[in-house]
Length: 272
Image (tube, rainbow, N blue to C red; front, side):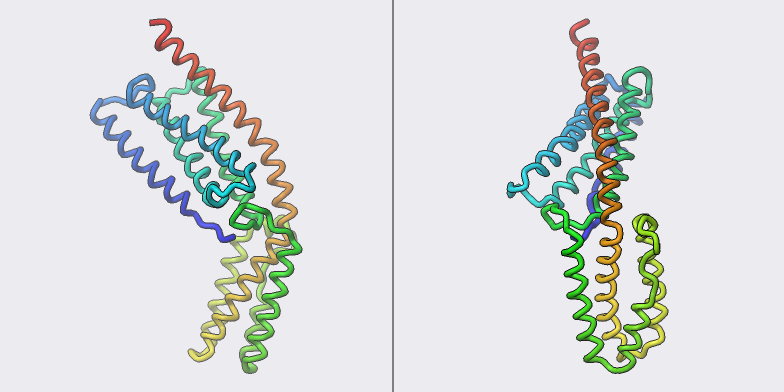
C-alpha cells in the first residue's frame, strides 16, 4: 500500500491556522491567553476532544475488521491528524505554565506525540493492504517473482544495450547487508539508487531512454519489495515493543488529564 504524507501537511496547515488565531487573540488582549479564559478553555476542550478521538476511534475501527466504515488507511490518517493537532491545542491551552499536574499532563502529552511519530514510521514499514491487513513475506515473494518475469520479458524483447542496462541496474546497491541498517536507512538507499540511475540514464541515447524508464520502474518496485522482506521481522518486533511502551504512557496521560479536568471543574464551579 502506497503511503503519503497528506495527513502531516493537513495537520501542519491546521496548526498554522490555530497559531494565527492564537496570535490574533494575544494581540487583541495584549497578553498571553489565560488557560482559565474563554479562548484558553476552548483550546483545551477542543484539543482534549481531539486527543480522545485519537485514542478511541482508530482503535475501535481496527478491532472491527469486518466493518465497512472506510479504509483503515483513511482512519490512520485521521488518527495521525488528530494526534498532532489535539496535543498542539492543549499545549497552547497551558498559557506556557507547566506547574503541578498541568505540567505532568503536558509532559505526558509531548512524550505520547513523540512516541506516535516513531510508531508511524515503524507501522508504515510493514507492508499492508488498504484495509490495514499485514502482507506476509510469502505474498511479497510472489510479487517479486512476477516482477522478475516481467523483467525477463522486457530484456528478451530488447536489444543488447537493453540487456546490458538491465545488468548494470541489477548491480546497483539496493540495501545494506544488515537488515536493521536497511530498516533505518531505506531513504539513503533509495536516494543512492536514484542518483546512480540518473548517471546511467545520461549515457543512453534518446531512443533507448523510454525502454530504460520501463526497466527502472520494475527494478524500483522489486527493490522495495526486497527491502520489505528483509526488514519485516524487525519492524514487527519493534512495533510490538512500541505498543508495550506507548499504551501505558497513553493510559497515564488520560488519567492525569481527567484528574486535571476534575480539579479544574471543582475549583472553578463548586468552590464559587
